Image (tube, rainbow, N blue to C red; front, side):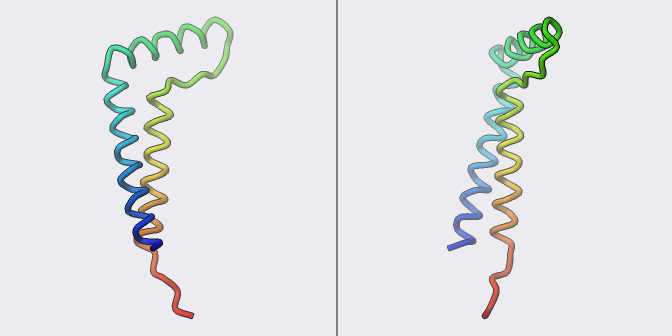
Length: 76
């Protein structure tokens, strides 16, 4: 069961990562990046565009899922 959950997490992580990558290269992503950089320069905040969060979240899910899927089960 743990391996199945791991594989599902890997698939979901890869999908999220590529959604973020596609959003980054779209017009919406470019506008979001421009708006974020302008807002950060005005008030000194540390905002992050949504496509960056999608890519980070997808990468983390993929790594955690791979760890779960490749981990040997303990025989007690």
